Image (tube, rainbow, N blue to C red; front, side):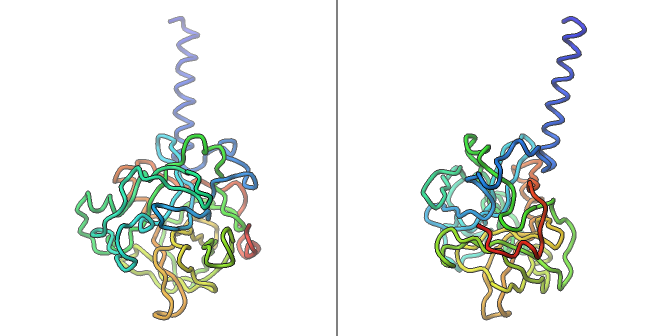
Amino acid sequence: MPLVRRHLARLAIFLAAAAVGLVASGSTPASAWSRPAAATVKPSMMLYTKGGQCTANFVYVDRAGRAYIGQAAHCSSRGAQTDTNGCKTRSWPLGTVVRDESGRRIGTLAYNSWIAMQRAHEKNRNACAANDLALVRIDPALVRRTTPTVPGLGGPVGLRTTAVATGAQVYAVGNSSLLFGAGSLVAQTGVVEKAINGGWAYYVAMARPGVPGDSGSGYLDARGRALGQLSTISVGTDGLGNTIGSLAKEIGYARGHGVPGLAVVHGQTAFKGMAGLITAG
């Protein structure tokens, strides 16, 4: 091979590797995604898995550049609503089709922490109770119609990897059809009351707690970093609030159990904080 052609080949390999590095870090170029206003796949959209209704949290990519949208693992549960032990409860299998509220196919279930923990014979009780993340691989034709930006709030600007103090403010967008009709996007805020399940989850007091259908919705910290996703609803026990899984721990588990390099994709607009507390859609 002539010297110039060898240099060009090496340059092409270098650029391809650099692109994969950008994808794995979550800082994918904005040109890879749809404008938020035009997107049909986005955080906080409704997702349906074999009749189970949930709210999407964030958009993710893995080391190979595959794109996902997240939901709660229990959204594909085959157990009763009271069956919350992910190490025991059966789930619909990987490959199950996931659809939007119009019945249109979004993708297929590619990772489920409950399935992963059962395959690994997980013994950590805190993980069994709170590791509740599933990933839907977005159909390739829909990737360019996807936005990673959280409606109303903007962001995320990264992943929160450190513990959260009591009293820290958090933000979320709920989208249950039980709120004000299908498709309602309502930004909300609350505060962290305590870490639970050995740091695998947090109990948060919300001004408007999540309701059935909000499960899986993403939570941001005060800087706009992805913090968690709604796992269980707690109304009338410790007050009005919700339990959210620690996304850093859930992503770490996924990386070690079949989804290497998994990362949250950064939003295309700045995080708005309190200014984003308006109807988001």
